[in-house]
Length: 327
Image 1 (cartoon, rainbow, N blue to C red):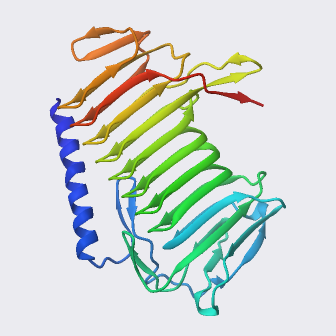
Image 2 (image 1 turned 45 degrees about the vertical axis):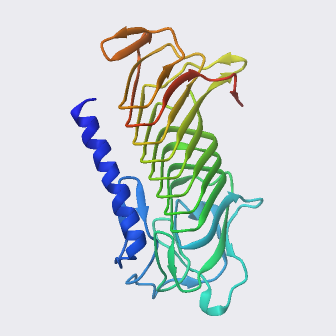
Image 3 (image 1 turned 120 degrees about the horizontal axis):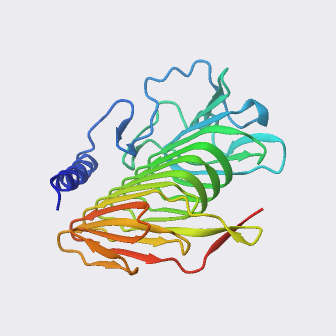
């Protein structure tokens, strides 16, 4: 195994130990702590909320360009609105527990669950288990959607956002029918799953939670990091007017310690150059490629695939005939 690969795996192993240590010791932090694509904690101590509003609200969809949510426990649901309004509401709470929100001049809607909320890697201080729902019209042109949660589950359905970032500590992340350019997902111990995820560039990070990404051959770049969680990605075929759309995959990179990695490639991929490295995990390539030293070249070798694990199994195989039909 290359020295750089060993170094990166060692770093991720250290990260795992550090996160577990913080979880046990409950070390107090101020602000947000971020490592790679995993943002730990969701709290607003020290945030100036003097100009924030309270409670449920609705806005004209044309006024909202960016959606930033900070939530501790409970759930966050973003779904398509049946009206032209962006609506934000939570389940019934007392007056003192109502959420805070602010719409800035540049069209950023900021939402916080509660004043002086402190949560750290799923450990919450104070009763703050609330459920937030955000309804966004399909016609809304979101540029940036950012959801940061501690132990809250996050579910986003039928939402188009040019950039989307979702981070949790222990909550699950489920994305369905989401579309845009750049997608970043991070979790410590929560699970991640996507379906009908139409993004050009996808990055995912996990410590112990499993990751299942279902996207399309129109995705150009996919990158994932995991310590002990399983990683599986599906690149489904795309058809337009009954004709297959060319595969646009150019780069796939996955690093894991003990979690297995499975990559399901589209049937119309023209070729790839794969470098698979594992200390003790099995490796299986379901394509008739040509071996050159530590690389396997299939077809024109255009798509670069680099997967590194310590003990996890690595598998490359052709996807079963799952397709997306473009309207």
